[in-house]
Image (cartoon, rainbow, N blue to C red; front, side, top):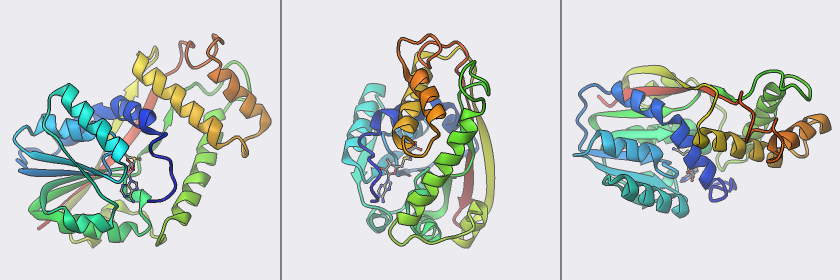
Length: 275
Ligand SMILES: C[S@@+](CC[C@H](N)C(=O)[O-])C[C@H]1O[C@@H](n2cnc3c(N)ncnc32)[C@H](O)[C@@H]1O
């Protein structure tokens, strides 16, 4: 695994998963009358999607697979709280994919981009499917919007500048992955190249208008804390001061209190079936 500190991100990942979970339910509606006996959630993190899968398919044997045991422990606690059946399995991926056995449905949410050879990983994920089985791959989509263009202080357009900083950081993360290979990220084309058929993509809007409930608002705070931490060296000092003001718990214009914080994003799921 590369050096992303997944344990430090556990809270944020779970809040993010919860904020996004309406899209997972809609993405599962696309599967029609698929009746999977075995489901793998690959790169499950804290198991929000895995628990949605277990809820939707109560007769299936669902396993959350991840390389971070602390996140799998969260997934287990979550499954217990929600009273759904979930197994967990620690594995270094993609190497560990060969030991997982076959599945009728493989969900891979924002995991493949953390592997160096993305086409190679997709080939292996396709190989895990039973004939007729479906791979649902979450990649692409749009960056999240939380705030209006003009915050009433600082230079307008902060989020667009954060997107640029994030895209550069993402590019560096990919370059540093073991076996990093450049590929045109044509996800449907890559699923076809992995031997899957009936490939199509669907995009789901995640829309939590202002005023935000506590969970999505806390996710917004955690995300801005992460930006502040990650971009301390790269952002302009005026933007850093804006981020500091947004993160000040006593400031009425900060993310904890301002009435205009929202969550708007889009998640794309690419589906393919093993012939
Ligand atoms: C961005 S999170 C996605 C979590 C969840 N699937 C979601 O959609 O919110 C990526 C997950 O992949 C796991 N991961 C990243 N690289 C991995 C690797 N090489 N082997 C195993 N797990 C890995 C991390 O531990 C993390 O939980």
